[in-house]
Image (cartoon, rainbow, N blue to C red; front, side, top):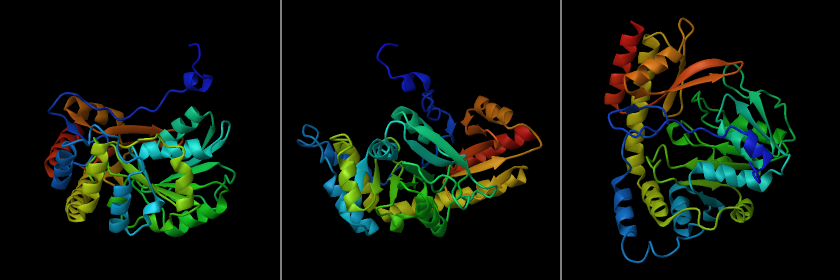
Length: 346
C-alpha cells in the first residue's frame, strides 16, 4: 500500500484478548477485575459530567491526580507521568528512548506488546528466556539495548522478580529498565521504591482498581526523566472522566484492599482446585494463574470451554510449550469454570 512504512506492512500487529459482544459469557481471558470499581468512582464521574468540565480540555499533566498519587503512594508528584492506560506509557518511553534501528529487549515468555512496539518504531527486538524457575539469567546477556522491559509480576506466569535481581539487571544494561507493574497490587511487594533515573515504573488502574474500561495508567521515575517524557506524550492523553475516575479510585484504598483480599482468596482456591484436576500450576502473584499439563493437549480444553461460553487464554511459546492462563473471576464464575473443567476431563 502506497505510503505505509515497510515495517508496518510487514508486522502482524498486537492482538488483544477476545472481547465478546453478547451477554452470558464467563470472561476469564483478559485479567479484568471481577468486581466493580469503588463507588467513589461513579460519584466522581457523575460530578465530572456537570457544569463546563466536558466542554473544556482536561489537565494536560494531570496535576490533581499527581497530588493524589503523592499523598496515597508517598511519591514526589513531579515523578508521575499520566497515560491512557499503561500501554500508552510503554509507547511513550519507546518513542523517547529508542531510535529507528535501535534495540528493545525483554524476557520471554512475556507480554507480546513489547515486540509490537519495537516493530512500530522500526527497531530490533530480542527476547531473553527466563530460567526454568522463572528467574532472570545472571549475568544478563544483552547490555546495549536502548530499552529493556521487565513485567513484574510477569504474564503469563504470574511470577515476580526480587528487588535485588531487578537492581542487578539495571546495573548490567546501558539503557533504562522499564518495570511494568500492571499486576503489582496483587503481589507481595512492588518496585515503586526503585523508580529513578535508571528504572521507570509503569502502573495501570485497569486490573486492581477495576478501571479497564476507563483507560488510565501512570509512570513513576526521577522528575528529570518525567520532564523529558512529557515532551513525547500527546497533549491531552487523559480525558476529564478518566482523570476523575482514577483519582477517586486511588484514594479509596480501603475498597482496593477489600477487593484485593477477595481476589487473592479466590486465586488460592483456584490454584488448589486446578492441581486437584491434574494441572501443574505456577504459584501466582497476579490476578490470574498459569497452568500446564503433559498428559493431554491443552488447546482442546480451551476450545471446549469456549463452546461452553467460558473464555480463558490458550498460549503457546516456541521452545517453552503451551499453557492456559485463567483470570481470577468471582467465586461463582470460578465455581462454574471448575465444574466444566471436571466434566471435560472426566
